Each structure stands twice: as C-alpha cells, then as structure tokens.
Length: 493
Image 1: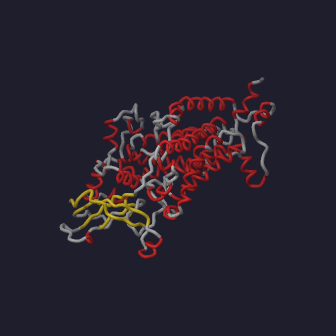
Image 2: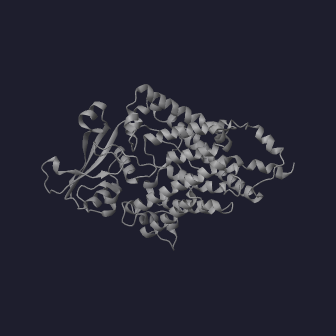
Image 3: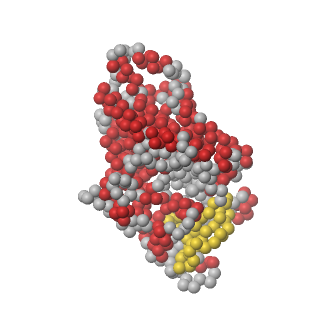
C-alpha cells in the first residue's frame, strides 16, 4: 500500500472546532496566569517579597529548575518579571483574537512554546506559591496545543490523542487518589464536608453544602463513576468519546459553580474538547447523528482523498507525540502505584505530570485571622480590627466571592497555613510587613482597617468556621458562624 494512503489516518479533519476552542481557551487561561503573576509575584516572591526569588535562585540549580531568570544576561528583577508577564499576555491575546491562527500551519508552535517557556520560568522560581497542580497542567497543555496547527493544516490526530491522555490522567488520577485515600470517599460521606471546607468557597458553596445527605452521597458516587469510568471512554469511537467528554465537562462545570479552583476546572473542560468532533456538535444541534465509528478507519484507508496537510507536518507532530509518549511512563506507572503521587512532576519541564486532588478530605474548617490596633494598650476587643483577604473567609457577614479562574495565591497559602503549623518563615515575614505598613502586601488584601498606616500592635487568632444555618442567617444576617480556638501570635509590635 502506498504510504500516502495511510497519511489521512494522522489527520483529524473533523476536529476543527475543538482546535479553535482549545487554542483560544488555553490562551485565555495563560493570560489569566500571567496577569496574576504581574499583580502578585513581586509582593510574594519579588526582590523584597515574602520569599524572595533571588534567594531561591541562588540556592537552587538550573539543572533542576530551568528558568530564564537564571541566565547571566537576564537576572531576576521585579521589572523583568513584569516585562515577561506583559509579553506573555500579548502573545496569549494574539491567539484569543485569532491573529496567530492567520499564519502558516506551524505559526502556533512558537507562539505557545514561548508562552510555555515564559510561564515555566516563573513557576520554577515560584516555590510553594506555585506548587499547585494546575500550574503543571497549564504548562503541559500549553506545550502541546501549539502543535494542533493553524487552519492551513488539518488538526493532527496524535496530538488530540495525547490531549485525551492528559485528560485521562487528570480525571482517573483524581479518582484513584480518592479511592486510595480518605475513607470518606469510600463510604460516600466526602461531600458532606467538601463544600464547607474547600480552600476557597464561592457564592453557591453554602447552598450546595446545605443539601440533604442523599444529595451528597449521590454527588460522591457520581464523582467516582465520572472519574473512574468515563476517562476510558474517551478513547472509544464516536459518538461515545464525545458523550464521555461532555459528562466530564458537566462535572467540571458543577465544580466551577460551587468553588474557586483557579483555572483547573476550566482547563479540564477545554481538554474535553479534544474528544468532541465537529460532526458530533453538528448532530447535537440538529443535523442528525453522523455514522462515524471504527468503519471510518477502513473508509480512510480505502479512500483516494488527497492529504490536506504536508507530509513534514504529520512527521513533526508524530515525533512530538512519540517524545511525549516516552515521557509518559512514570505518570502511567504512578496511576497504578499503591503510593500514588498527587500533583507531581517527573521532569523539570513539567511535561506529562501526575494529577489529583482531595486524597484526604478536611472535615473542619479553620481560618487564620490577622488583627491590628492603633492602641499601645488595648483594653477591649473593639480596639482590634481585622485585615480582610480578597477571597478567603474572614468577616462572618461577607458572602464568599467568585474569584476563579483568577488565582489568589496568598489566600490559598493562608488555607494551608490553618491546616498545619503557622510557624512558617513566609508568614512571619507577612506579619512583619503588615507591621511596617508595606504597600505591596496591602494591595494583596481586600481591606486595610488603618488605610495604610502601620498598626501599633498586631495579633493572630485561629477560629473554627462553618456555614450559618438558615435560621442563624435569618436571625443575624451572618454567612459564617465561628468560634475561637486560640491565639497563634500574641499582641506584638
């Protein structure tokens, strides 16, 4: 058989809508990530930040954490960081508005690879502030999607197949880590706690938490079915793959409307499009179901339709697929390991990673509350005023806000702090900077009770939080109920 007869099998001409959605959606999330870095990185990790990046760069190696900020001619500075973020945002906007797609078939490759490299350079010096699974997921997907090519070439089937493998790892990995982890996932009680104890609730989280027990058991069981069964169907012929992708995407939308997980859920939804064909979408909106299944392979092999993509393009994308497949072995083995890793990278480039979340379910919500006073000898509680954060709970009368897909890194760090020891170096520096009236830190907060003036004294208390019941809310107007558990930092100045 002539080699060119096989070449159409490497094309996915029925996925042009998926390609465009992936391009623009992933680029929009890169814009969000660069914007968050522009706004927050200098205060958290800048030259005078809570955990200065230059110090981290000095004690780590480029071999383990490559970054352009390690190059001799581009040493880290807050100014350079912001320039990198602006370049990343401009490139991402060029894809969102469709400019990058107007060029030759290969043009999207350098555009996405530059965004990937710039963001990798940030993540690899971002320390624990950038230790979230969605950072690696954004890097992995950003590296891959550029190889889908512009409309000058057909979408490569192997690249779409790898994106489905990525979605498989996200969903199946999360399902397996839950089954191996907390017993609440196995006895179907996990969702009794999740909506209340998740890192950053949103406006509908309280409503979701107050659903009856049977509702929460159904949520938990549904999560298992979707994460452990549906990912396998992504590799089935159409329309099965598209239906499985839609089910996964619906479950992610539920998480979008009941929580704030930065861009994790949105990126997972975008990955679902790698399994949804144009024909399926046409059929879904009234054009009838296409007769597309395994017989498509035979039809392509026996057809005389000319290849729309140049041979070099199909060879290139095949090489990229084989390269990524070779990197997949550690992630594949991790899925079946009794010591399964959650949100782990197996190489310094953050390609083909392990994903997962909530292997251990938090059942009690604790919040760290930072308070200041302008009195050198406060005699009553009214002299103390709280520093409120933009996303995390604090004021009991405040409804939880919608933040995602934006990521409030300091707020997330405060959630982790309340779960463990508050004696962290970055937190001690945060207290010092609030005492000094640091303006960069002030911009990361929602309210400063003293309008930028340094407080005379500061203290830190820890509380247990839960949602106010319907009766409590009617009576008091409170969104949260809380009780004090103790003092973390006594009054100090």
